[in-house]
Amino acid sequence: MTPATTTRPTTATRPTTTRGTRARHGESSRVSIVTRAVSGDSSTKPSDVLRHLLRSDKIIQAPCAHDALSARLIERAGFDAAFMSGFCVSASRLALPDTGLISYGEMVDVGRTVNDATSASFPIIGDGDDGYGNAMSTKRTVKGYAKAGFAGVLIEDQVAPKACGHTKNRRVVSREEARTRVRAACDARDESGSGIVVFARSDSRSAVDLDEALWRAAAFADEGADALFIDALRSKEEMRAFCKIAPGVPKMANMLEGGGSTPICSPEELQDMGFSIVAYPLSLLAVSVKAMERALREIKSDGYPSDATLPTFVDLQASVGFPEYYAEDERYKK
Image 1 (cartoon, rainbow, N blue to C red):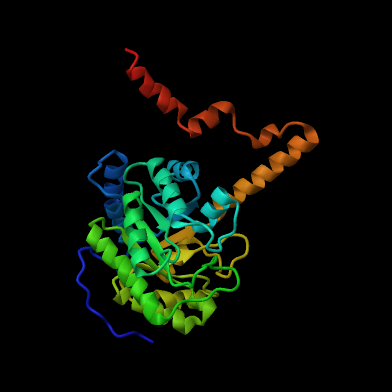
Image 2 (image 1 turned 120 degrees about the vertical axis):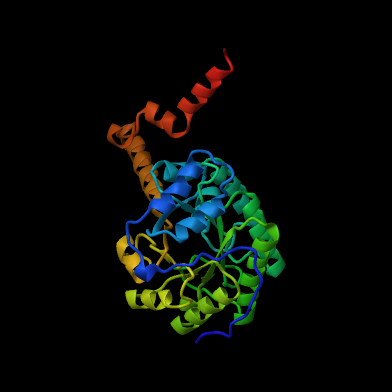
């Protein structure tokens, strides 16, 4: 099952872990670098913060953003990192399904806004889909995401047009093409000097079988991927098997809300399995859709939405930064 190991020179140091021997709540080193970042130390790159978090003693919880406001809310809620979901961006920007319809240009444009809306060193991982073409396209995607401010980028092995990982009709490229795609992403990381963290994803669990997915994950680690992700694992046993592949390379879990293929587990359970980071891909978009639909029903039936479901106007202004704007504006009136 394990592919032949290849040796690649790299300027980016892959995060290493000894998760089986780590204390769950020892966070002092993680806090120090995040504190420097939040306090405005612009010399701390978001990719550096993400690499440090991936080596930390506590699993990273990364809710998924779909626009600038949701990204800001994630940071304000006290999370250490976020993910920008292709599913959610396709839905919010285009009102279209995650079936390969959104383009690189549209994704990187939203990426700039989510990174502009958060602290300079707050790490956000961008969904790079299948790299939007061949190996050269993948390199452009990784470099473009790094310039947009992303700390990490997710690159997958699906055939175009790609699809959401928990939907039907998924197919993957050949083993060699998949490896080449990951190799190109890692080359772009190294050539750009950005240190952007490359998350290599395989959809072959659903397209082929578990053994193929595990083989590809190990191969992606050999190509230099910084972190690994197999989508749509179907049991806790499969999740544990994944975490045994490529020891020392961080693994990502995906808790797809509302009925995905993967069992929903607590952060503590995921950490005990060996995961370093967990994404929550649909939470913010899903609750937003539900809330908007409810408000529209109330307006249509009652003429006004229920006050119980609304923030005050003052609270809403605070969410989008009016107080900070007014405070800074005063500096220029004296």
